[in-house]
Length: 228
Image (cartoon, one colour):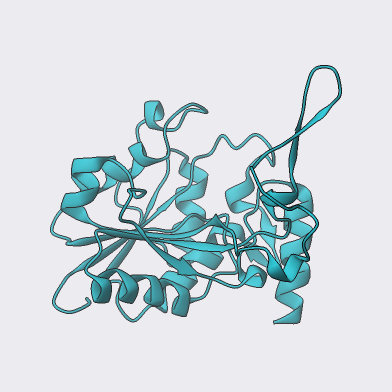
């Protein structure tokens, strides 16, 4: 609970991952990927309840084994390749009522900390915003990026008066890192999404912003965990 508001966290984990089969329960540094997020949520100062939303009985069993709360099995039609990411969240908050703030924690971000979750919640409440999401800096500035036309010529992705500037003089640019999304429940239900013009950014360091989509990401995350 934060300032009298009850907090529900949701970990979405479908069984049909394509890039890395069975990704959510694949072992990372000695335990299933999803277990890292379950443990992180349990260490938050503000989360009152954290649930796992899955369509997969094996993911449900593994989640429970590592302390996860799986109050329902998600319908198959909400676990397809083309299912919008927000749909399982909206389904979960209809199934589990009585909470004021919703936190989305994707299991593919195992390096986030409980302090990141709590910092994002504090940013939401202290700023009076309707939603807050975690971001990190990009390693390559879009001011140096180009589209390549059909004839092989290059067109700058962004307009800029001078491209011959040092990296230090370029404006900071941020990208969603997928680690933490928070919103007031009513706002989320009304707008069916965390990202709105007034959404606040919670900045995380790049070393905790690994988003696992590939086997290389698994290897990189495991290396990072050994350094922590």
